[in-house]
Amino acid sequence: MSHTYEYPRPALTVDCVVFGMDEGDLKVLLIQRGLEPFVGKWALPGGFVRMEESLDEAARRELEEEAGIRPSHMEQLYTFGEPGRDPRGRVVTVAYFALVKLSDHRVHASTDAREAAWFSVWDTPKLAFDHAEILGTALQRLKGKVRYQPIGFELLPPKFTLTQLQRLYEIILERTLDKRNFRKKILSMDLLEELDEVEQDVSHRAARLYRFDHKKYKQLEKAGFNFEL
Amino acid sequence: MSHTYEYPRPALTVDCVVFGMDEGDLKVLLIQRGLEPFVGKWALPGGFVRMEESLDEAARRELEEEAGIRPSHMEQLYTFGEPGRDPRGRVVTVAYFALVKLSDHRVHASTDAREAAWFSVWDTPKLAFDHAEILGTALQRLKGKVRYQPIGFELLPPKFTLTQLQRLYEIILERTLDKRNFRKKILSMDLLEELDEVEQDVSHRAARLYRFDHKKYKQLEKAGFNFEL
DNA sequence: TGACTTGGTGTTCGATGGACACTATGTTGG
DNA sequence: CCAACATAGTGTCCATCGAACACCAAGTCA
Image (cartoon, rainbow over all chains, first blue to last red; front, top):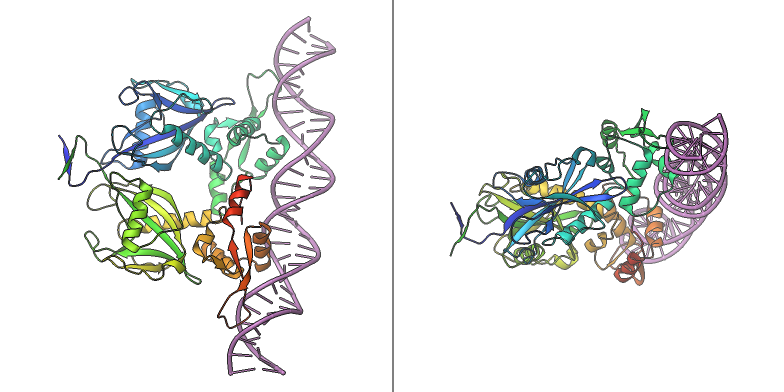
């Protein structure tokens, strides 16, 4: 069955930039393409938007289908619609930005027929379409947003050490932070729950574990509090 | 002539939220619809994206066509694609956010057949489609961005007084600012050129005029300077 | 010329951000 | 068991910034 319109229409897709943090490395999820164009090339996961689903739903569905992933944070990033960006014709893509806890997703490397894999964001293969530009935009967004919203926690396991948290910020912001100042600041916000547990299986003094208190954050946010680091 | 595709496609439009500042009131440009659906209702200017133009181009074209306006600042805002947002069927719209100097655009009220007019953003008529939501998103964006990027100047005439500038910020941020602190801060950035001119036609002491120095801002920006108010 | 209207100007104080170094605790290997 | 190692954890000082705050100056108008 085919569909006919009075005027030509661009095709509409979603593409997702999914970030994960892997022990000192910021990773992005890529899919090896199984179809033309760019067969065999790596690309962002994504696909066509269906008529009955919202854009957000489309993005979630594609991630689930192509990589078995359900991100803990997802937001719309930007819409890319340059006429020449897809060799098949006019394709406009709504890009999404997502964060996952890699601890939840290490297993599923390739659920679908296509290969899915995590790459260091600083060292990706050449990407299909304009996906390198989309990735760049997503990195900018991550860098800009991580300081004003507590989204960094979505990249860590539920229980984490302050050093892990600091490393995360250092990696994303691409600069070193002072340990004492960092701890002072983050603890003074009163958003971290100090647990009665410490790291396991480390060959040195174990660090205390903390948990991010989502509830408390929502409360403080309503009261006009602004996260800032 | 008609166009046929194997799979159904949403229609793609752009819609523009254009802000202007009118002596103590923040205005938004609206168009009275001449066609179904929502004939006679007010809506954001916008229309269908053509196959050979980029999204940005489409937004600029529609503004030019429907209101004879060429904004001094324009950026993509957000893409709205809920399946039910347009009664004609699936229509996805890429919303844009634009600022104009009303001093340049007071004349053209209705270039096209349709009526175009400026409304106070705090007191608009009921809008067609989900345009009220889009306007709300644009207002949030304006509020958030005006503090970190010198876009407020795009709403003022090229020469302005410090009081005008302060009023602008007060209106957008919806709070009063301290005169001395405001002036200290903005002047210390060294982005305003103090002119040898004063206001005309006021029935009290005339205020000095200033001009925003775009060149200097670009330089400072490259050097790592961050505008913040 | 006096009343009115808006323009224009500095200081103080508390809070915040950045620089900076040492002791504590647990592990490992000889 | 103890010495070496690795990372955890902690406080002070100073410069800067933001917030609060009030009066004189200049021009207009009746």
